[in-house]
Image (tube, rainbow, N blue to C red; front, top):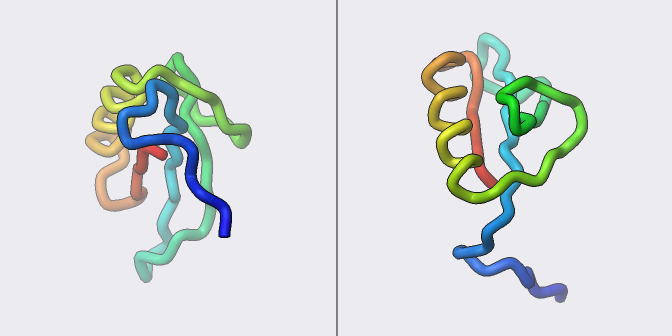
Length: 70
């Protein structure tokens, strides 16, 4: 089984935004860029920036999305 080589303190992260349908199920996954824009392609971001962008995006999207930092 493959090991995850990225420790929890890894300085680089991806911010995934899962758009949810009315039933609360994920219907589409998008990613945030360093400018805070949604994209279909993953973007690697510094950890601190990724956490701030994820927090802001979750506030904006509310219950319509699930934002995760990976």
